[in-house]
Image (cartoon, rainbow over all chains, first blue to last red; front, side, top):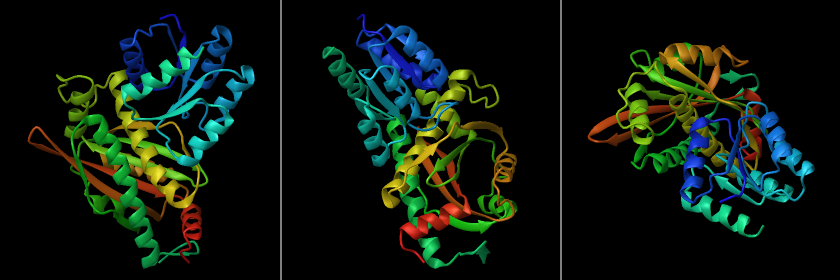
Length: 122
Length: 207
């Protein structure tokens, strides 16, 4: 499929797991970013149709990157993908404009359902 | 016994034990979900101790292990420290990325290092979620650090990073797994800063 998806995660293991999952559903147009700086640069340059965004990065450890990306494009489809599954933080992210929140470890089916639903509504 | 002005009485120990129990329960659930085999947990041990006490209590000196420290901050601050015995780490690697992994600890490639760090990150986040549920606090983790060394060395290094390095409150939990007929042990150490313990107790109404 042609949908461009940006994975923002500093852990190569996590990125590989997500890529494998996306590839299994024929999502192969994938960009990767390992830092917030890298994410902002690729988000701005390539305008991906979906972003899978981790919270803990080498240069960020809160929801400020979500805020920054939504300032650049308020209509961006950003799905949080983090082990930090605290109810308060999930609620904060959704209130700020994240489309969904996937808590690690996740099931492939859950991730694909969310991705498919968001990209079908493009 | 005092940490600054914080008395370590039975109520505080009972509260930290319960938080540790729920925390490590959620953390091992996450790991179990990834690995596909069951993990058991022991009741946490709460100590106000110096580095030697902690090392002696945990009897780490004979272990070959991998450790990951995960700092946390925001409403409370401190560090979670994960220690996996060498055989446990090797079993995880075999289960998730390389079923022919030999068990050689000090030759981790990028993917294996990333896997071990990601597991610690997920366990830390689950542990902190349990504390967040009890206290209505927001806690973020920072990037983790992987140590391949004897746990005595790891722990000495880690605890020296804490501001109250002479005595610190340590909530230690042992967890274990059985897979393919073999037993594996791991440990979680919750090392909150003193002011964070005061904050947790205040929110929970423990005077």
